[in-house]
Length: 602
Image: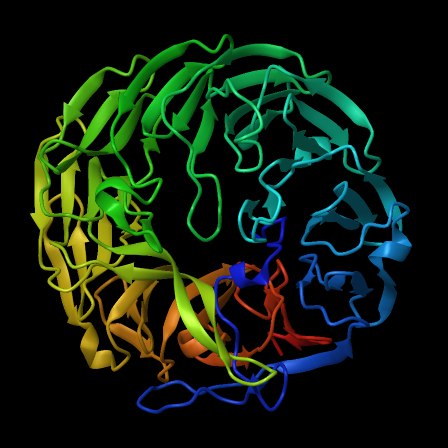
């Protein structure tokens, strides 16, 4: 699903600047390399167009392809679905308060256009905020009331949470902005700037919120924003439920732990769910509250990887995430992967969902860095021991200066990698917590698991591909994946009666019934991620500063086409210079003033 907010700094578009190409979108006629079995096709260009400005800050579509926006520090251009100009203008002329050099800007997309939020941080004056209607280019409102939304002189990437300022949160269900100030939190209408309510009983940024439409109530938790950290004392961790109409606090409670932010994305690292009459908060373990009065019902406190630190710490410039599985909920129980501080062992616990009573504890698992996935099927709890983890890091790279010479730049990277460890699949009896069976045939790595109904599980280890009977652990087949000639397995995709194994140099598909290989692709080196968008499948390659998106027909393994883009802009989901519509039918490639619309399916 397309994210509804867009990163301000395009260095956060998940990775690096792209190389020069003969054509700014550079449609690739075919995938290079041999040794595969499937032909390569090509995408068709629908149109090429230009923005009036350089589009060095934002360049993306609304998801439907109806609106395409390009911005720089001082101006914006919006095109329609045919690449024709809808409007273009300088911020200082559009806004009545002279909002101009906008260090922070992000989009909020709605059914018909949306909002362009601008923040003009003035080093020697009063900060300015303005909101522009993307569909018309008209100013909706502006204000100079909101100060200290970021620390003065901060770098642009600091404090940005998925595009939003950490002190400004868009509440989609209310079509409103929640703005954190020194003494209070203020809700304002997104389309007018009118203040709806203000409360001084909730302080800090909104780390996570859930809106309850049936009762018009919001449950939210706070964190200490960088901008406000030095501005007020007495900050405390707050979990609150409030009346969305008037801001009345219906109840509040404190919570254990500190909400951190991811190293590169700056996303607040916390999760929260409402199930029945309970709120489940995933932070330093699992904390459970009564939704009606805020009373804490039970908790299971343990170390996890949510802040990229502790046992999982890399360095100051490199952190690991997604190493511990999220809790798995049923109607009467919750299953948790526990990290034991004392002996560095991990294990699974089953708790009664109402009382928190510990129902069983699995055997201890030692020597494992990551246990990223937990599954429930066929009367078993299946634990994936080992697998890919997310790495976020900054690297200092040498760049050429247009004025001659070179300079060092701190470049963000987000990618998936494998840690050397003991890998395996552990099947635990759902009733007793006893080990039913275990397989440790995964010498080099282990992919995620694919569950077929309640009977079978499929998994790869890099060079082999296996099928197991869930009930007994009997091995159904063992296939030599390296015979496919597409490199070691990195991921698996569930596709009907097949499992498609994404590998370092392409794809190989195996039939679930017997493990026989259905196809393997031409070599596509360096694939690091895949997307399923509206039934369309894409592979991404960002090696060496490139950003190539391949469209793949998963039924046959044929490559529909590929596009390599250069430049800033694009969606954080797809990398520099690329955005894709939510139906998966069109790709937009950006380079400076230029934009190209590309049709995926001929």
